Image (cartoon, rainbow, N blue to C red):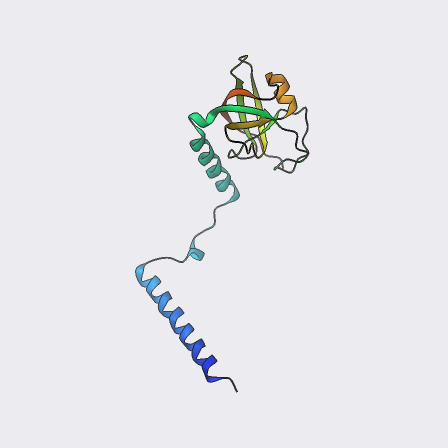
Length: 153
């Protein structure tokens, strides 16, 4: 035999859940389970739009630095000679043109990592990209988003 208190508590909980569900349905609120889930492509496009909208203006100019991580956020091994970079918010695979304000050089890089995590810095360049751009340590740069790299199959 079950304890009467346990049975009574279960009855109260069931009644409360039924009442809550009735109120939700009466108010015309659809449960989140009924909403269709967005595809991976929809999420990627939305993230790209959010990142580029939020980065226009002063966030697109700042200080660039050089990084030497072994692994990147995209799962690739870091190739020091590749034209790649790290950015905090742009989606991985974004193509960005970086212009060095000191010497006027520009370069196109692919975002494959996250960072920099230092205030005032907008991008971390791979050693190869920094060498071509003429960055030795830190440099003032401006960024321009060119699009997204083609997807690998």
